[in-house]
Length: 135
Image (cartoon, rainbow, N blue to C red):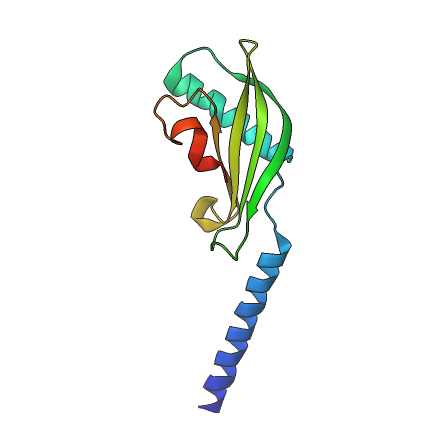
């Protein structure tokens, strides 16, 4: 019985330490990370090829910055809210709102980014004016 209690206490201590380390590490990328911006461009351009066929592509993304962070005290998912400007192939620049979430990658590992280009969400996936990806 004492052996069982010792193992139980060890496992609880280990898991608590790992959770604290995860919360402090903030291992998911910043708003300005090139991997995030590239993923947004690739997914937008892929959706254009597969679904919309409007001829609009993201050529580049400029001026990325954060404007909100919801940590573990508010939710079990750490979120970083950001926006930037997408320079499109037709010469128009549109605002892009995006949300980086830790632990939302494949099978709960890694990070994920959800994004919305203002004026280019005809199915209103992210509600009016990209509401669901803004803080």
